[in-house]
Image (cartoon, rainbow, N blue to C red; front, side):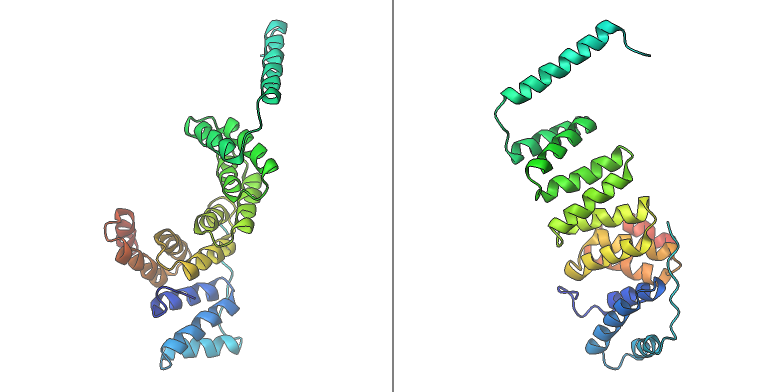
Length: 242
C-alpha cells in the first residue's frame, strides 16, 4: 500500500485508527494486517484486529464539518452580436489554445470568462481532465459548490491516480461539504500511492486533531516535518497540538 515506505508502521497504525473512528472497519483491518505482516509480534495491532473481527471495536462516524436605458441595451445587444460573429468567423481553436486562454483569464481575475472558455473546452474535448479540475476550482470561487463537486469528481474519474485532483476533491468534501469520511478516504488513497505527499499528511493531521485523535495527528505532522523540515506551518501546527 505505502509503496515508497512499506515499513512505516506508524503511518499504517494511524490510518487504521482513523478507519476505526470513521466506521471504515474493512480499511482498518487491511492496515492492521499490513502491520502484522511487517511486525508479527505487534501486540497492539493484533489485539485491535481481533476486536474488530469480533465486532467489538468502537466505530463512531466522524461529525460532519437600475434598468438600462434603451440605447445602452442596444449597445449591449450589438456587442454580443459582434462577439458571436467574431467567434463564428474565427478558425476553430485547439483544446490547448482554449486552455491557455482560460488560464490567462483566470490570472487576470476574469473568472466568468475563464469558466466560459473551460466549459467550451470540455464540450469539444470531454476527456480533458485538467480543464474539469480547473472548472471545479473556479466554480467554487464563484460560490457554486454543487457544480464544483461535479467537475472535481469528473476530473478524478478521468485521471483517478492524479494526486492533485484527488486532493482538490478531498478538500472540497471536507471544507465545503462537511463530508469528512469521503475526504479521509481520498487523502488515504493519495498516501497509499504517494506516501511522501506532505499536503495529504498535513490534511490528515488536521482532520485527526479535529476528531480528537491527537496521537495520530502528531504522527502525520511529524512525518511531514521529516520530509520538509523547513515547513513552518507544519512546525507551528505540531507545537499547537503538543
